Image (spheres, rainbow, N blue to C red):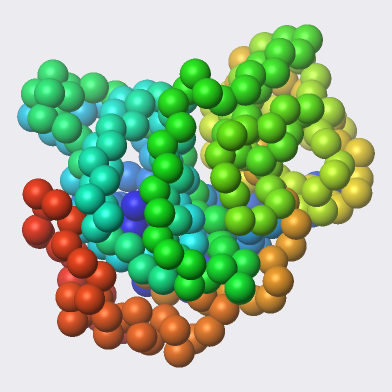
Length: 305
């Protein structure tokens, strides 16, 4: 999915209590008539582990004939991770991939040296109408892999491990979390999980990774007695013992990993450790050097500076 031109989000929040380092309130953005809430990058926090971008899409009820239409656009230096709560999106990319994604599946696209893709509602789903909701995230690649060959991997919901606890259930999307490991190949140590909790349930977080966060997608959770509503990204202090308590039925995205190996610059849909590489990507997109997306020629133009 396409990002915005600004290097940081203007969504911020107060420093949190206890083991919470920062609370980020996402800002609202529009992508082709579809509203998203952007938690990363933020003016208060650019990254959590390798996660450099986090958007919540919807939930949006799309009437028959309506759909998501994110036209072909480019990426470098990152992997995009699409994960849906409801609805369906058809992914197309310049490798020739055509892959629908449905709730609980994972689309992991490694941009590396450069890839273009589009995300649209398929014709059958568009004709019927549906509700679309989910999370779009970007994972920055280590510097030595920023120019790796682009690739795409789809992992169906049935291939992802599920961990059940007392009053909570977690699906591990990528990396290792809560004693389980997803089959998704990652370029650096990280964790990413989709957790649902019943009221009163308590979930201790793993402490293995230095940088950890929880995005509250629905409901309300508390940490050390302080409650946080949906639409909040809670970033925790390294090494602190953290227990999430469900105030209501809720859904959380747990994410994080090891700190990146240096600063990352972000402009539009480009991520790199080098500003000059982003300038090259701008020129490449304008000159048509990313390659076409099959059956989807209406590409987005490079934004004005």
